[in-house]
Length: 125
Image 1 (cartoon, helix red, strand yellow):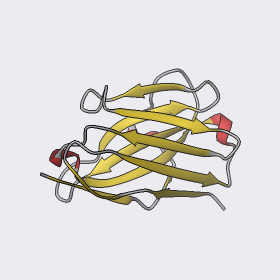
Image 2 (cartoon, helix red, strand yellow; image 1 turned 30 degrees about the vertical axis):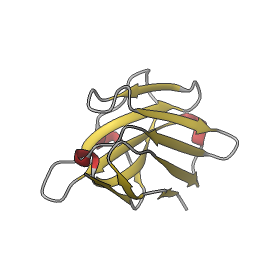
Image 3 (cartoon, one colour; image 1 turned 180 degrees about the vertical axis):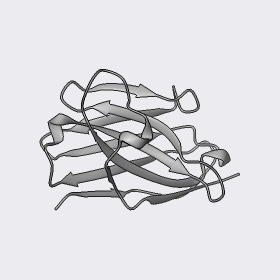
Image 4 (cartoon, helix red, strand yellow; image 1 turned 90 degrees about the vertical axis):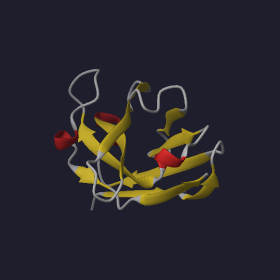
């Protein structure tokens, strides 16, 4: 059974930091991208970053570049999203997802086939 378990969300003040984790199981971790997304109710889902787990290569959306850092622990089949300098507009439910690896760019969100349940991040001003 494929599982992606996102955790680490919470309430933090603006300027603070959080680290999200995405523990995965049930698929070949090294053969997949893992991506982070977020969604605010009533708005479209936003792709934030992805990691090519076999190489450790990461890509980021402009909205989080320089503030968020994605990493992976391939021994634990887990990826992380370190979020620094958080802003109130970062408030959302954050999801991790997996897509089969094909090339060295983040796939569009419709190619992600496995999704976690989400973890809520609230940034207070």
